[in-house]
Length: 320
Image 1 (cartoon, rainbow, N blue to C red):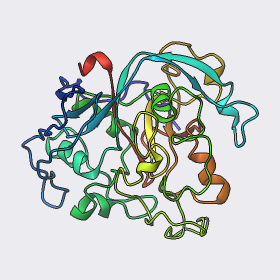
Image 2 (tube, helix red, strand yellow):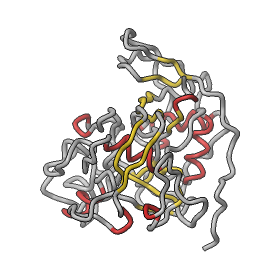
Image 3 (cartoon, rainbow, N blue to C red):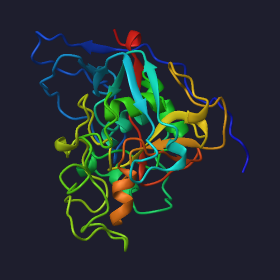
């Protein structure tokens, strides 16, 4: 397999357009683009008035709710003694990050259709390797489900269109687990998780499903369906539903020489990192292992899978 370029073809970053929310403001109304997706694609939702808290904003480009993650030190990776630790999560180390913003949920079919309508994104492919998620993208009833079957290149192009970018692996992990080295976004224990994430359980059509539990969905679930699984910063679905592209190239030994401040991963590579597990992970050991906030996996940057989606991020100064 040819080694892909470290910099994907894409679009120049758009000027960020967000509406800032202060602690004194109780509500805001998102301003969505006026463009209407083509026939058969999810339509923009009617203008809503969401209740936002301090440190949250609504993007006027795609209506995404973004959450501010403060600057500071946090743990990255796993300890040798932790159950289910894998070699590429070692050594556990402290990293220092500047403040940044991250989408509260994964990008939805509805949001991605706006980018396609604007001529800045390519639609998911019609022929899929696994499942039938193309029907999810094209059907209105799945408008608020995470968009899938988009490559790393497509995900990066979408984030650039919104004036954001893909999060770094360090930013993703910080947003998922906070500063206290918790194992899962919700804490240290992963037992009885059907109310905290979407994974392959009773409803899942594959033989490795965990038939003891039921999260209510055979494949993907609408974003934000599991508030009990929220991270310390209020990010949702950072475990399960879909694996999420991040900006870093994958290197199994990256943590041995990673920078202590603002790490961004290797300069080049063959695979891109994906994080967070998905609806497809289901055996007793797997869904507990893949749902861990420190778990790392990888895919070729041109891969399009029914179990991979993404969310966007931005540096603090870009959205202030």
